[in-house]
Amino acid sequence: MAQMVKYPIGQQDFKTLREDNSLYVDKTQFIEKIVSSPNRYYFLARPRRFGKSLFLSSLQYFFEGRRDLFKGLYIDSTDWNWESYPVLRLDLNTEKYEIPGLLDSLLDNTFKKWEKEYGIKEIAETLSTRFQNIIAAAHEKTGRQVVILVDEYDKPLVGNLNVDDNFEHYRAKLASVYSNFKSSAEHIRLVFLTGVSRFSKLSIFSDLNNIRDVTFSNEFSDICGITEKELLENFQEGISSLAEKRKISYDEACRLLKNHYDGYRFTEEGSDIYNPWSVLNAMQDRSISNYWGRSGKATIIAEALKNVDADIEGILSSIVSMRTLEGLDLKSANPVALLYQTGYITIKDYDFESDSVTLGVPNLEVRQSLFDDLLPYYVKTRRGTADLVVQNLIQDLRFGKPEKFVKDLDIFLAGIPYEMKLDDENNLHNALFILLTLIGVEVETEVHTSDGRIDLVVKTPKFIYIIELKFDHSAEQAMTQIEEKQYALPYANDPRRIFKIGINFSSKTRHLDPPKIEEVII
Image (tube, rainbow, N blue to C red; front, side, top):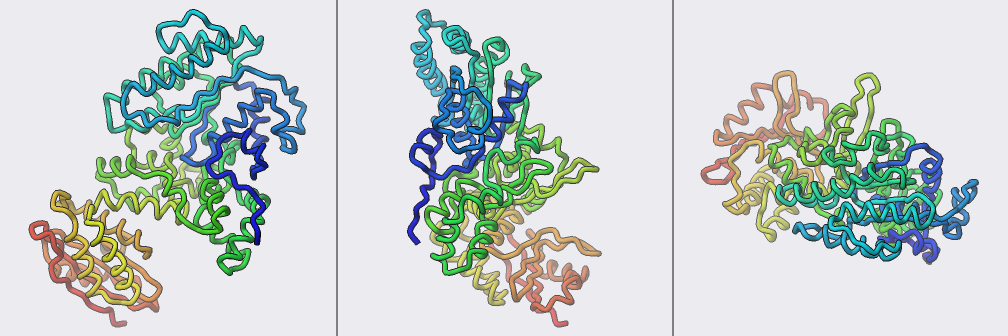
């Protein structure tokens, strides 16, 4: 089937997208909500690659009066007068901010352009005062209040969470610039900021008591991303093309897309959202792949989880209050908030009585991305050894070879460089959980029974493995615990073959001792 649809891969400029006749999922109903509201200050947080920049771009051209670009879209049918406003759009997403001077340089270049445009001859000494003068001059020259759009307002901070000096430098610099949103209020028609998180110590949140944070608003739940309805209305050709290439039905192609890219939820009552970056790439390539994972790494996540000695499986299925999410501040290094705000976990359910949310990994793509990125931080094994042994582990578990599984697991752990200390039991548990999840088997840790907690339960279509892991004790002790606490009893009615495995890891030899393995005979 010939592809006729143009998919705007990585296109963040609304004007270019529309002039190229590329596919656009109409989000302009949210522009109407914004311009018809008395609120003048907005903030929206969403994970990376979710279309925040494109939405800001549509706001820019809307306020510049470019009605021609909106022909046929929802907003074109409204009674908006399409008058042109001065728009100041500040894009902080273009630098990595590894050194302090990069923000100053970016702001200086941007302000020079605006100072020339609005006829400012006397240039103030500080960036904050220059920005204040630009806002006032734009209002005075055009006779219309100014629209200010800030893309990724927190990028300098997110990139320096683990570099205290840089973080504080950028925090102070941004706070001074953003303070103009309050001091220049008489000149401002609208301020709309996007980012990854809500840094409470910035002046914009501490000084502006009338800013509307629509991050958790049901009314704006699908302002970014693609809903199921939007997918089926806008991507029929792409779904059909994907189905044709894979030789599956249209409905099966829809299920593939749903399992891999759907599952995000950002509000109490919001519907599930597909990742737009991944859907567009899948349609373009007529393929299912890990597009989101390729676009960035969970480096900050991995460091934060290690720093707090986190129970990874527990975090990935947390039940927390809405306040935990609403009060996000990445500098606090709260691993739950960090994973949520960066898109690695999302809201799966909301309980009105307790005002609590159940969190979980959105979809298969994110699960693969998360574990691909986390595994090297827990087991930095030599790459050649890892790739081969991981494939062996998959075969061992799927074909019921527990003895070989333990042997290959020992080879994997032995490949970890000595400087990576495996002298912490929780760290070893996390490493095994990540490894087993990464290779695609169903794994649970700390499984509660009537008489204790099983360290690991691994399930494949034909086998169940009950694993007790000891640290500097003995495999015999591990098996004794399985027997005495009857860990196999809850699985007695399962038709699958069941193996009990007692393992001990010696921190001295950095090897697994000879295991104790028994098959459960029902």
